[in-house]
Picture 1 (spheres, one colour):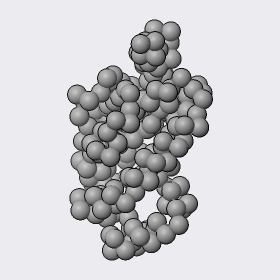
Picture 2 (tube, one colour):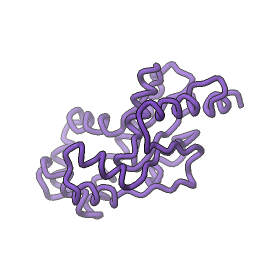
Picture 3 (cartoon, rainbow, N blue to C red):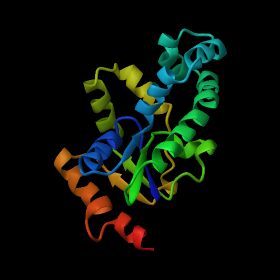
Picture 4 (tube, helix red, strand yellow):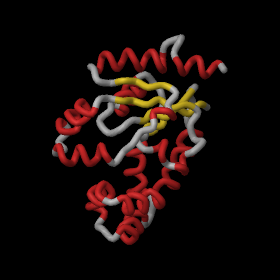
Length: 190
């Protein structure tokens, strides 16, 4: 089964792309929500994270967005669990392809080899900032989170630019994933 990564920086619209795909019956693994579910379902995980990072679990986001060391510690604990969870989830799907949504996956070696194809979603910095502020982040917090992520577009097979409306994004998603001549359909035939 083909695995397509949908990636992009915070506020780029990768979740909107994945929501459009999900509405059309494409299985989507949302790494953020699945990771949060792991925090609740893996016995002792929260306690281990608190012990390793030295902060209460409720302060985790603040810690990882302000310290590379804290983020790397968290990743070393959680990412092996996420990869195993994704692989189990993928094996239970019945579809021509599945989508893995993640902002940071391309820069994390533990996920090397997991995807057949990569679709990157981009938007201008101003648009991303406006989206994040509209979600309730302060401008400083939004800029800090944006700066903590990098995206190497050279690793993408396809780039979807998302500075416009949801309707224009939907048309782009259809061209890339769902039409008879879509990029993904051409890949499936190879």
